[in-house]
Image (cartoon, rainbow, N blue to C red; front, side, top):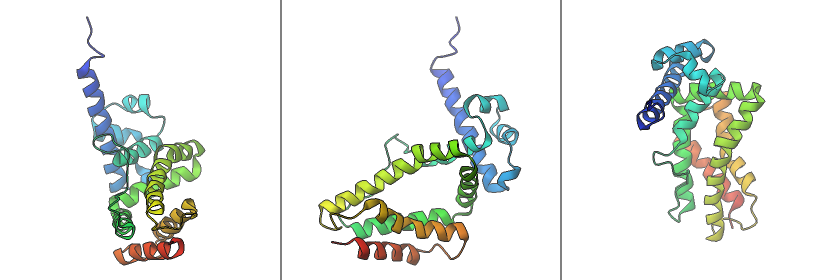
Length: 199
């Protein structure tokens, strides 16, 4: 009798998945995205390329899954922004961490590769919005709604616009490499947003 679908099989599949995602992140961090192949990811992960193709249809899908895995909580919980009751401090903490993450060379290469693929692949763009962008935006808006309820933000503020004002300049500076992603810059975006949307 075969026990192929038992707990050992599930653990093996998960170890294989984690090895593939780690290999994809490492390879994209080490060399130009265009030079990374599914074959190279498979070799680094110690699996056959068919193991990858059974789960993901393309290199870009593997790279997206590798990025998505970074945002998954260790305990499977959904993402939430800190809520200490001090909106300014909470947003500065988050924006500083975001700037630091985007300034990290290995993350930079991974997210640039993904953005290139998203620009040219409508299906991947839709998956990105559904699985990563929308949940993150909802977590951010939940924190802003909490601030509205506490009287720290205008109760009629357009929260989508507030998020755009907070994050879009940082993203544009990163995308165009037009300036450093510093703590002071992150703080200035929070200050400007709070002035614009304060009570």
